[in-house]
Length: 352
Image (cartoon, rainbow, N blue to C red; front, side, top):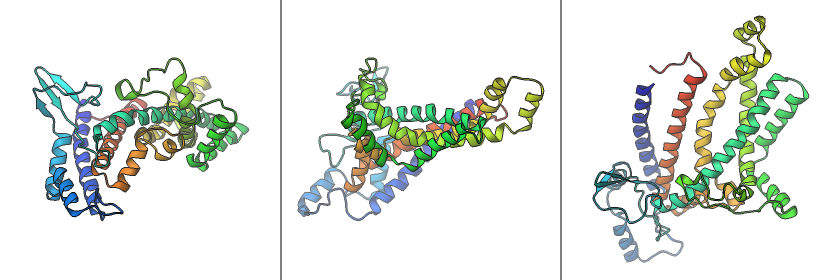
């Protein structure tokens, strides 16, 4: 298992490099540039800006310099000007040296902020939202799928699949405003927009006002609106996989030996039927954590989704590259965890 993990981590470097090359090529193949305006800037101004950000260099040199800044650690004896937490935990002290890496560079549109600043302030919020949405998806989807499979062609099955069809059919762009109007405007039970906690800890997953419940007032509606779609996918996969598993020969053998139905389902059938569900959790987690533009826009959440979409239209190359690379890293790590879970769920799977 250890060798397999090391090999996958080495593959991750190759994956990130390939993704960076494709993204870099697509960005620069689009007509225009980061300083293209509806009212054209003077040629001298554009020349100065290109020289400042080294956009007048050959494309191959721009790409090599970017990869060097992002993926190669830099050692220095000078401590960073900000604290470790404020610098997105990209600094570390080893003996008398500071190691700094993953420097995504300046943002072309937010002149006073770097890409690291944008990630530090907004990515933790998307991480909070995505984690809670995935949790809601699991808490709703798995019980519904299990109940629908065990009670096939009954009212419980129809109810569970009805919820699944609702989650798939009603997008966030419809469900979000309905939730805001009902619970935020009409009933005034929950704040209609905003995000209560700023991220004071690592990646913002531990908001400072978590324990007093203030944080959840802002998080309930967007997390539910985003998670209900995931719960529908999880419920349908769980039902289909469990229905197939409970018809296997070893399940009939276990029943013929007189084992209790509860033990047969929990110890034998459910564990093996979770493999298809675990498979989709990797990319689903990466997609939710890196931000969803529609949900964040509807509920006024200052996450990464808005910056990613606007960076494409504004041709803010460093933000585009940084967001894509972070998503690639999240996706590779999530898939690695999924593969490790395979070995736990099915003892026949080995990575020797």
